[in-house]
Structures are given as C-alpha cells and as structure tokens.
Length: 332
Ligand SMILES: NC(=O)C[C@H](N)C(=O)O
Image (cartoon, rainbow, N blue to C red; front, side):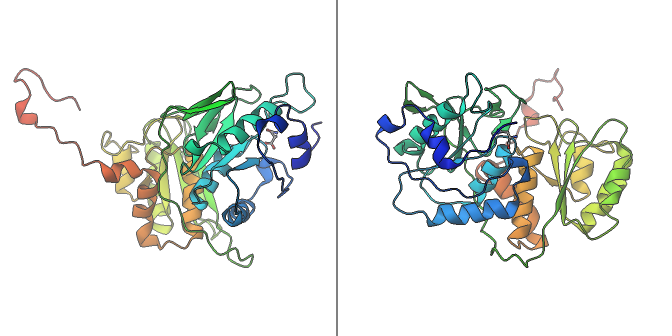
C-alpha cells in the first residue's frame, strides 16, 4: 500500500534541490487519490494560484491518474503569467528507482525558468515538458507514461538545463465561476462509442434532468453507429453535445463522411466538434463553460474558439478544382 506523503516530505526527499539555488515554500492543499479530486477542488486551487504573489514559479504535485484532466482544467482557469508546473510519480517513494524526486526537481527547474513564463500550465514527467492541452497518461505503470500526441513535447530538462523546443499551444481561458457551494452542480457525461452500440446507454441521459451536457467519443474521425443518431439528435436538442474521437490523436473531421452516423450527419444534428481535444479534455472544457454560465446559444462558438484557437486564425484553404489536370479527379 502506497503511503500518502505531505508536500514537505516530498521536498525533503529530493537530492539536489537544496543545492539548486531555489527557495522552496510548501503548501498542502488537498491530500486525496487523484481520481477523487473534484472540479471544485481544482477551481479552489486555481484561486490559490491566482493569489500567490512574489514567487518565480509554482509546482503542483498530485497523483498521476487524473493529471491529464486537472492540468487542462487549471490551464483554462488559471491565467497568470507565473509558470505552473504539475508533476507526480509513477513509482512509489519506497520503490527502487522511485521517480518522484527526479520529477519534482525537474519540475522546480522548469517552474523557475524564465522561458516557462506565459505558457500556461505545464506537466513535467520523466524530464519531458508537456502542454496541458495535449498531455495524456498512456501507461498504467511505466515511468514514461506521459505523452503529448498531436504535437509532441514542449521541451526537455537535460543535465538540469531547461530547453523548450516547441511553442506552447495555449488558447483562451474560461472565466472562473464563483465558488459558491450552493450553486447547482454541473454534470457532463462522457460516452465512448463501441461496436454494436444501439443507443440504449445514450438514451438514459434523456431520462432525467441529471445531465447538463455530454461528450461523445466517437469512432475514427467522429462517427457513431447509424442507429445511435436519432438518440443523439434528441440529446443535442436538450443539451450541448460535443463530438470527439476515441482514437487518441488527431482532429475530429467536419466534412469528409456524410453517411448516417458520419460526422457531417452528427454536426448537422447539432453536435459540436471537439477539434483537436481528446474526449477527456473536451469534457473538462464543456464542464467549465457550463459552470461559467456561458449561455446555450454561445456555447458552440465558445467551445470551438477555445478548443481549437488555430482555426480562427487560419482562413479556410481553397482549392481551385478548375486547374486540376484533365485526367485526374479530385481526391475526396
Ligand atoms: N500516485 C499516482 O500517480 C497514482 C495514484 N493512483 C493517483 O492518485 O493518481
């Protein structure tokens, strides 16, 4: 059984930190398994981070299980310039080759690096620097469990030096909701489509008022079995429904497949494309937008602008089909 350690014990266990020339102050915020963290825990933490003054950088340690979601949540909610770096450990503190101390030291080095400023919330694991919007936990036990599909890592820590090799993909944030415990609880469902799904599970979301939004992790570029479409159409008339992909990398398509259950069909039914966000991150974003009280009519544009800020900047690509050689037909 893995013991729970406080922040001071974690810091004390790091060889090299004392000699790194960094004054470290510690603060215990919550102590819980990371799968049990709530949105309110993280919004409370974002408010604490906002209030921290006079520090060069901030390191947040937590269990690794939910870090791909909590890092993105904090990235959307915390808009300060002071770097915030999240880290954790894949191996227990007592294990041979425990990775926690090395991760913590690397995280501190990144947090105090001037290059980390203005890049939002970062995740540092196994000497790699990840953007919160992309990072995923991809292995149950391996120390190299964290990866950044769809763009790669932002940088590395080598021999104690911090090197960024990629620009951080930081989109707009979401205003923090008032942290009033009496406010209604937001619930966003996440449904993964699978072979033979006939819509029975999706239908349960229509049965009561428990749900305020849903994310569908579709096949491939954002597809569902044809029989699920009528349920999703009714669902999208009741609440925002975001279409993401269960594949793990790549954008949701918007104009390639028009067959029943294809993404053209689903977007026509009112589903909102997740852009490059994976289903877990899409759910975090939808939850925050709903918590912030973004009105239903603004949700599709707010979601798209936040999920995929690059699309707003680049004009649609136009291909002049008239100039294709006569013997070639356009590839569709
Ligand atoms: N310590 C870890 O990284 C895993 C642990 N199960 C968690 O709370 O996320």
